[in-house]
Length: 300
Image 1 (cartoon, helix red, strand yellow):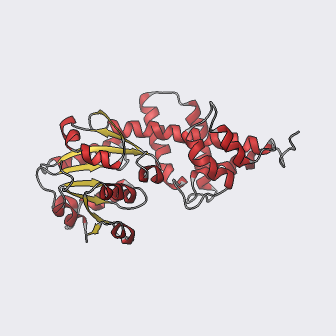
Image 2: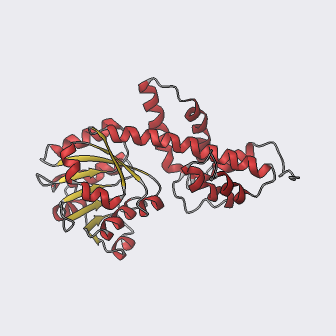
Image 3: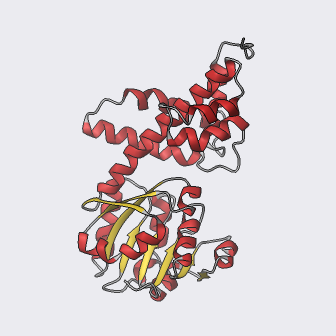
């Protein structure tokens, strides 16, 4: 693919915006659609269009980055929907995370119009995407994925073809099980250090250099230490669907998930306690609330 091709981006929100910005920085012309708040996309060099059909007509390759199945159906269907304007030979890159069955069904509808569909699941926070450090898990026809290589290279330096369409979402759910476990583990460690009398910021700096370090400790540890949970890199509200999908995946595969099963209720509880809009780093507040030590102990 030549970089002069036009990429259409439908869904230019918290995750879609840094993806679009990376493509623009790499030299692609990017046209996009979002129902509202398109100013930042335009300020970064994108061209905002009126509806999904206009994006499909203007673009050679389409990227869909939508938050849920209902939003996906809204974009695909209707007189100004994507399906009314997709061209034979066009490529659609699906970035959204839904059930595997839903993704396969919508891919079949798109392919029936003569377009090709590739699955690209993003593993990483919006800042990681902006810095091209996120991972892309790819599923679909290898020849089609090879054709899209310049687009994937523009989005991130780390992308992996895992197999046929549907493989990528499975790996994404596994990755998010780890995010859940590692975020709670980081909160537990920082809370323990704080109650032991250590400065939480110092504890994060020290722990992330040791054998127990993790990406979540490095990314969310500073947020936990500073008790800074808004604006959210990834909110409890967003994680909620991954908890359910991850549980369903484990059940379908008859796999024991002792750590995920132990961690998941904390994140559901955060939603129940009105913390849904906060970053998941705020789970440390629940760990702290459950801790029996009333105040930090003095260290000798």
